[in-house]
Length: 161
Image 1 (cartoon, one colour):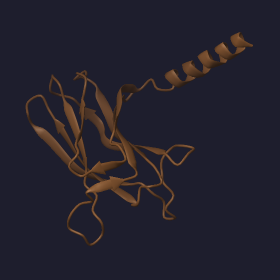
Image 2 (spheres, one colour; image 1 turned 180 degrees about the vertical axis):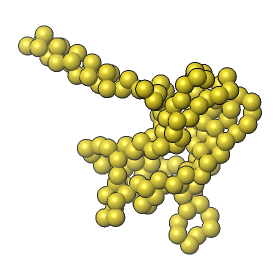
Image 3 (cartoon, helix red, strand yellow; image 1 turned 90 degrees about the vertical axis):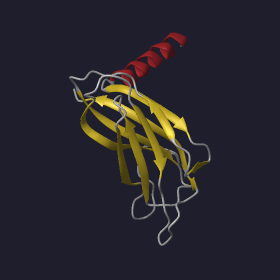
């Protein structure tokens, strides 16, 4: 029985690993129970080939405590030449009935959100990505100080092949 279980485990592990051939970088960081508007999540990226293009994603894990339909993020990418690319992004996080979008069987959902498609790291050296939440309630000027329901923020790079 132990051999049968071991073989099943090895088969499942092989399938999981082989299904993720495009992954170049994939890292998550916890934001705790609430994501403070001043908290910046940073990722130091590995040096990547300048001759290849990549798809870049922001990954978000959220739960039923997330009170909004959308998520607004400020994502900045610091390049080795000290130039910084800054984008303000909006992502749909819930269906019209309030059900969270994303993958997952429990109340925790994981969303893989496009950041940059077919991106080329044309400058040799280290890149750094910083992500900050920029959610605001309708009709209010100040941002949401403590954003509930977001548990982890991740950054992922995939090859196009």
